[in-house]
Length: 302
Picture 1 (tube, rainbow, N blue to C red):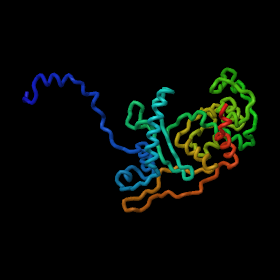
Picture 2 (cartoon, one colour):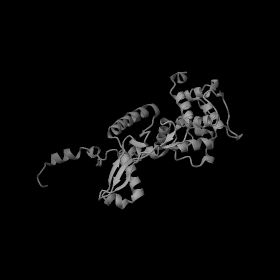
Picture 3 (cartoon, one colour):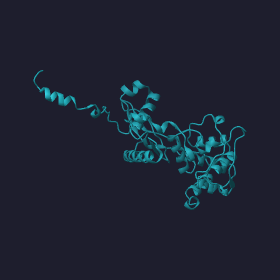
Picture 4 (cartoon, rainbow, N blue to C red):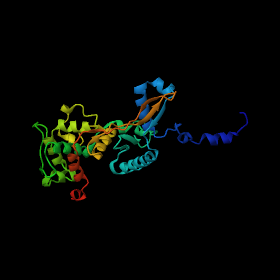
């Protein structure tokens, strides 16, 4: 009507579907899950108003080079997961064992992807850990006097005490191997001997071991049974990595930390990371037993 374009140009333009080309505006946030994790910590401790208006300067433990590597690893891992496991997501946490400092945190493959609830930080949500829970159980068994040489029977076993409900776990390949040593059972990640090891170690004592190393969930042990050793109890990835860091230090627990220093608007330090010797929670000899098993290729080879 105003003469800027012809009727023909209008018709041509209106026939082009441009809606799929419109992308939502993305706020540029580097390491977004880590940033939100720190922000939540600050708001819990200092209040939302102080965080937004108090002029705080926050120095974190994030290692930017490692964070970029972590993001790339999650992107590639998620693509692999999608093809092999039909899974839509992935997450990664790295912790420095001697300090407990969080070096990288990627809570999903894409913070801005709403189709996978990308803004949900999977690294601090409860998830089943699968067989990666086994080391806590074997450690507990070692503490009770069992050794890597202890023989277990890898045969079909119904562990249920309920006649109407069977619990007959299988190994990953569906086969049984008869008498096996604990070190062989763990190295090959056999499920049936692992359940027997949990029976010997005790569910509650195994949870106490895991909690001493950094696990914060599993707070209702009476509701958990022998499937715990196969991942039947939910843990947070961040805790799980922290607990594995306790393995890496030979049994010394360090509290996880994301903060190096916080100063207020006047430059006064509100809190600051202080190095600590940590707390010995597992005797080194038991960690050495575990290390000797899970680092031994010949045990895993079969």
